[in-house]
Image (tube, rainbow, N blue to C red; front, side):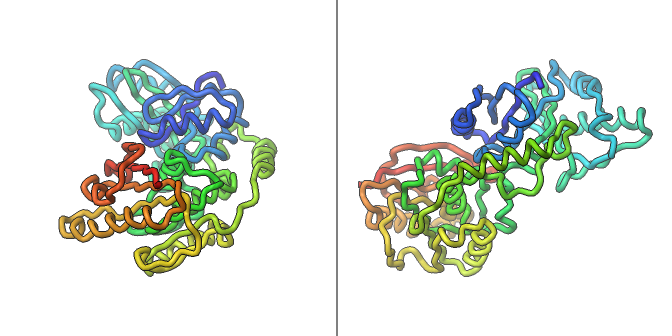
Length: 376
């Protein structure tokens, strides 16, 4: 393993991801939509996959080559010896990130790599592997930036946001790694008493519990891409998990609270918390936060309220955002932190609080803002 690993993430999360990697004891160089990390051995791959909260994938490079056009891409992909990866003909998929003047369609670029793989294997083995974009047995990643292409083995597969506790989402679920990033960027710590007044399916609450408990985000996953890498060592992987177990700290009760008005979302929320195994530590209630009577004063209020799609929805949500601002001012134990993650800046103005920090992030293709407030 001589080349840099590439740890991909959602654009805008590069710095917080680099901080996570540094805390694990590795150096990191920020790139576009990810971070480069000097590779050492497979045990490093195990640790990164297990511990990183804000990453999407840990990518192990197979080849890096100049890529001026589609011919260069096909030839470069064809030079890789694909036989060791496809001896048992696993299904596969190719994820891609492309910033190139001529190659402007990332799906087309992934198709070229797929053609190179299938043509080589057809010539050598007399058969072609099948593509499965929904549940591939093996994942590959194509990264093209500034006329350089890198093709990597996806050691995560499925993406790291799939923690395992959420099998269903609310109306607009937020991905787990984005939720973790929002919490870290807003400054959440285990010392806070956290409340989410519009908690939906509970992703912010569960990610906060995992941060406070120092539970590795990949701890409950049953599958990683590196299981299918030819250098995978089961004993080393178990040792990695056992070491992580020693770092887990006890959670305090009375530190994590959620309120959700929708009956349907509340049922999803309860099931997700049960699967996360934090039933004893996350307290939730099915009511309107505007009518709730709190038994504690939170020091950290954070939420991802609905954004609204149609004009009539947006107009009806203005009162909700205004109420959130009042709720933060009246219910928090001062000094405290408030944070709202929203895809509607006009609605955010109704909160009526002065922001301490603003971050531009994306949620499901929607440009959003994380707005952080000091509450005095």
